[in-house]
Picture: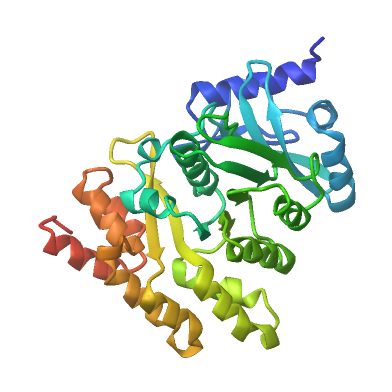
Length: 365
C-alpha cells in the first residue's frame, strides 16, 4: 500500500513528465523544482516536502546497496522505476544534515542517432570494431544518451556481445541482433575496474563503461581496447583537447610517456558535447565537438609539446568528420535548429563564431 510520502513523490514525478521536464529537485520545506528545456522553475501546485517526507521517500525507494554507500559517503546514485514503469536516475545527498534528491528522467527506449540529432560522423565512429571512444561534457550534457544511441545502433545492426557497466543502469537494451548484458555497479559487481577486468573473461565484443573515474578504471579500459575490443566510456571534460590531457594526467609522471603511446594506439575518437536551446523552444539540441584519430592526432598525443595542435587539427579535419564546438554551432544555425543568438551565447569564441556565421551568410548583430 502506498504511503502519503510515496504518493507525494509520484505526484512530483507525474508533474515532471507532464511538463516534459528532464530533472526534479527536492529538498525539505521548499517547493519542488523541475528543469524544462534547461530552465529551472518551481512546482507551485503541490505542497513542499518536509524532512520527514524526504526521509520516508529515501527509505522507500533506495536499494540496500545504495543505502550503505549513502551512510558512508553522504551521497549515492541509483535507478528508480515509478508505479507507471517510468525510469529515473536518482542522486540522493546530504547537505547541512538534511536530505536532497535529484531525479533525472530516462526515456523508456534507447534513442537513435536521429532522435538525438547527432552528426553522422558519430555514427561512423561507433561503427569501428576496436578501440576507445570517449563521450565527454559537463553533467547533464546528454553523455549517457549518446552512449545509449551507440549501443542501440550496434545492437540493431551487428551480431555482437555487448557488456554495459553502469552506475546506475539507465536505458534498458533488449537483445536485437546483439546479445546484451547490463551490469549495475553496487548490485551486480563491486567497481567499474573489477567489472572491466572480469568482462575480459566473458567473451565481449563491445564494453560500455559508464564513467572512467580513476586510474584503475582507465588502465582496465585501455587494456580492454588494446586486446581488440571496442570500449565506450565518458569523462567530465569540456573539450577534446582537454580530454586527452585528462587521460594522461590520470597516470603518475613516470608512466605518462608510455601512456601516450598506448592512447595514441587505441583512441579512436572523442565526442565532447553541450546541450543548447532549440530555435523552436521547449527542447534542447546537442552541439558536438568531434575528434577522429588520424596520423596527425597520433603525433600530437605522442609529443607533449604539440598538445596545442589538437584544436587546429580538429578545425581542419572536416574530411575525417571532425568539427569544433563553434563549427557545430554554425551548422546548427545553418540547419535552423538554433538561433544565431543562442549560438553566440554558447560559443567557445563568440567573435570567431560571429565571423564564421557572416561568411555563411547569416546576419550577426
